[in-house]
Image (tube, rainbow over all chains, first blue to last red):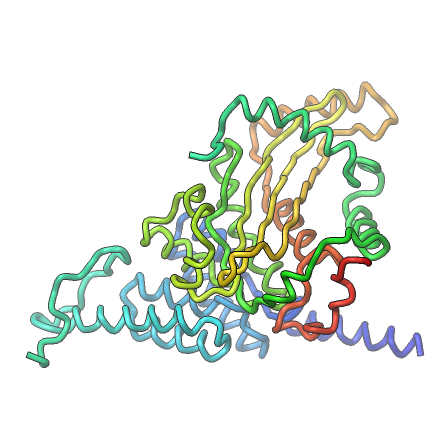
Length: 143
Length: 252
């Protein structure tokens, strides 16, 4: 019996190694992205690390940890990649329903930005600072 | 402004701190067999002697999601709160809770004009439900952070206080205090002169190279959240959810 449990434990450990999953989730270099942004204040480096980590998790068929898609979406949003941001926020909502109130707020905000960016010129707006308020009328067609 | 970097306060608490060190489990067997041994022992101690924390408020308000508020800093280290934030998600999420992502929430707090941790920690907890939809908010306070030079050794110290509050009732659900102390000098009791030299070299080295505090911060988080009997009961994403309650009930 003991031997069986031992074998089971060993199998679990090995399986854990194979998928890169240390516990409930496959963290990849999540910590590296956190350090890059929160300590080194380099959001571009954080974005690159998250992108790589997500790819690795998919290859390993691991479980994406909470917040990864939300953070990734936010960094995409800062870069002006609104479509990518929306996809990521949706993925976070699907994996973790606890995030829905916050994700819905962010999604509404991205839609507002998209509305701002489309009107007159057709030139994509420069990467907007998150905190700036928008005075432009968002919807031209409605008038 | 609350207790920020006041030298008087530091002088006053220094003594208490060392007193608490002497009483704490870690100082009873310093440098004996390394930290792995200490972690195992402290986990065993956690199993054998439940500290009698009261988890009734916790279970009555069983949270699913936890928001980490901007970390309060009682020390002069500028990077301490950033390191604490950058290392907290994994140990917290691995207990089975949804943890709001720190890169995003850090930016949102700034956006809302709430980057001053001292101010954020005084807000009514219900605000965090309104703003983020979080079930509970975790306040972390850096009490101590840095190198300490004793007679025979040099040590790096990280001390964190944790308070988890419910965002509906405002009740305190859980608290923890962690002191992580990593010795970098000799001080094993064998050769006092050697230890003295080691401490001196450690001092010179640490003047030149700032040590990496991330492993210490991680250890403080893991110990706080995962210690059986005194950590956080398993959350909804853990297979242990609901099954480990007997470990977290105060003894009669």
